[in-house]
Amino acid sequence: MKFYMFNEGTCTRLKLFGEDIRRLLLNNSWLESALEDSDYILINSCSFLKSKEDHFIKIINEKEKLTYNKQKILVFGCLPATNPQRIKKISKSIILFCRNIEEIRSFFNLKNTDLSPSSITNNKLSFSQRLIWQFNKFVLNDINVDYRLMKKNVYHLKISEGCLGRCSYCSERFTTKFRSRKIRDIIESFKKGLSLNFKIFALNSDDCSSFGRDNKEDIYSLLNQLLKIDGEFKIAVTEFNPRGLFDTRIFDLLSSDKICYITIPIQSGSQRILNRMRRPYQIKEVVSRIKKIKKINPFLKTNTHLIVGFPGENEEDFRRTLDLVKNGIFDRIKVFRYSDRPGTEANKFKNKIPDNVKIKREKILRAMILLDSIKKRSIANFLLNIEKI
Image (cartoon, rainbow, N blue to C red; front, side, top):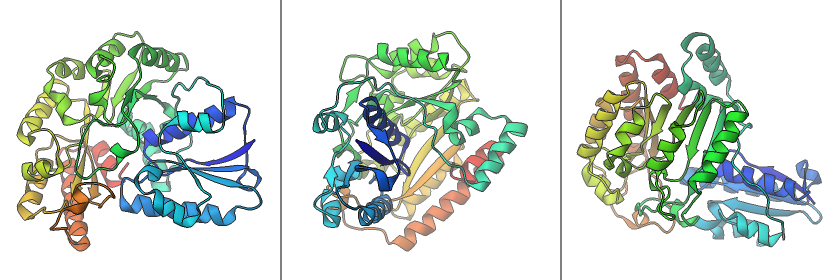
């Protein structure tokens, strides 16, 4: 059987899932081919934002128009779970799967094979990003720029999937059940990466702070065991919900110079908006803990995500988000304009913010982020933020 796979434009977690499916098929004697020669056209999809959904609907439409004879399209990832009706409008013959590899294995009657995570090697750099990488290589030598740009140099370890949160705006929690890998299996994968001479390891999850809650393990024990492994390496921790900062063990762990990067998605500087988002923390306490972490380990790069234009966000709420940036506790900030998602609580909220206001607030916030980088005299931070790397 021959297949063609489109596995671009999604988050790293979904790309890893796509790589799992690719290896599953190859290990079961399927052949990867050009689109026109394939029996199945596989499309990995994202639906985190309306713009992402529109992007993948366009791709599915384009690929469907190119099919001929007995070719079949199979769409997997987040979109089939959040808005399957929109895909079916393109063609009812499209096969849909979410983020459950067992369903795909069962559908094609495939044998069980080793699906241990591997690095992603198919990222493409823009011209400006290639210049930044060269500048970093010969001038800055900042491992965090290398981590953000050169995916082929990073060994991505999927430690869990799914989320236990109940955020009012998020549809990703509908896409898969929460499942954690066992620490012993992750340690084995980590050592495999070391044997392949990888120096940067990324722990990937929809929420790293929730890791292990389904099997009586936790992220703190995992990090503790990883940091005890001999070798020259750095660890990046992705999607660490701020509630995970309230376990005091995290301070000792993040003090290690082997942990170079952590993403703590706060989403807003306004407690009123955080409450409407159903984010389970107090912003003042989170800021206090991040300041303590930065004091313990000033070399640790901290990243966050912020949403502008959440329903009901007024000027005072937005000002508080600007104040959060002015705190200077983040080295990289990713900004999203709020987007209604099907099936979410926030989708039904009133007082929606007009697009022109969202765009204006996003521009103001991005300018503030760059100004903070300049104040810190950090070329690396400036490059990471201006190129949205």
